[in-house]
Image (cartoon, rainbow, N blue to C red; front, side, top):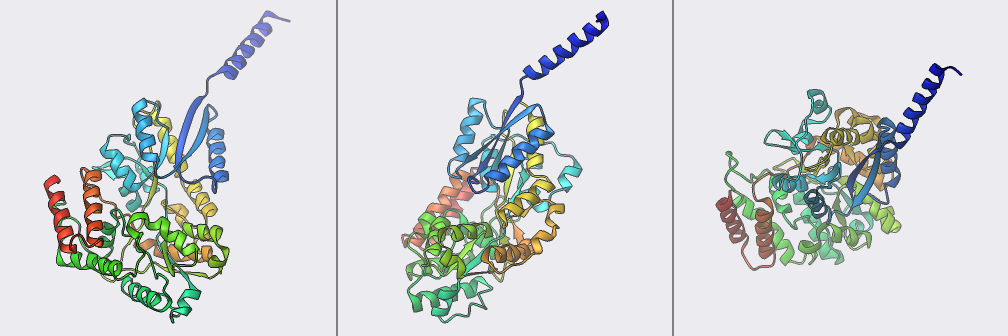
Length: 413
């Protein structure tokens, strides 16, 4: 054996040993409440990213929605944040204001792969603070049996908020069951105002103006429904969660929901699911827009390798993976241009999940995330929530409640 050959063998052995012993980069990404339903898809993403990046060990962690903000803040404070984290648009607003997220550096081509409206939702003062992922315009799942008992035509569901409210009253009066449970807890009335074409701020964006007679009239509509016993008593406390439970138990005629949650009805009560049909979310005649909250991926402050973290966020939200996620969920929609054109979204079906997907796909042109950015959001949101609850409980008039909120907001703004 020649010395040259021996040297070559030794070199090859050293390289092999070095590669085998090389420390892989440990990365972690967090999602919100996707386990266990979507474990297979998340594990597929892990395997694919590791295949494309052989020096990386990627770990997926699923976190409950009510815990993710505090968990992320604690991770950032300890200097051990995940590489990428799934946040809703309203969560992102609060965490940007707390300095917990990194600014992303995106090329024009990368920006153009997303629809402008979803991308702008994660853009703050001209800086990209996240990448849009999935969204789903609301639909109305309705119980055809309750409709018939109330004397309503299941083939002709309400098409506007105004006719939905009239139908809900008829259902309660004739069957004793609730017609609907409006999504008005927390700060959701802010979105109801905007869906009705009513402004939140003046043109300068520095002054709250949602105490006009039109705003008061809209809030009063729901106060009257609440006082009249037409919406459930725990509407303000438990909101959407309670609505889903009530609908699944056969005690609610109409469920305003993202189409992905129709799957929950199927899992909870197949008999009610089989009675369910799906209609478009009833627009407010004056607004013609549907508040559609966005999910996105962000890069937390203090990540060890910002470029690699951004690469992961771009991977998780690219055309191929957004389309695949939609095919797995069957009810969510991509925020990327190319994926959204796939024929999958135009396929109908007879069951409620298929109906929900098709109905929701027709609403995308009206979809917009109406989440607003303003300083001291957590503090101002609490003022809003507390005063709307006071109005619903009859402790303040609708006008007094909105006047008090606007006064407090403008003092802070």
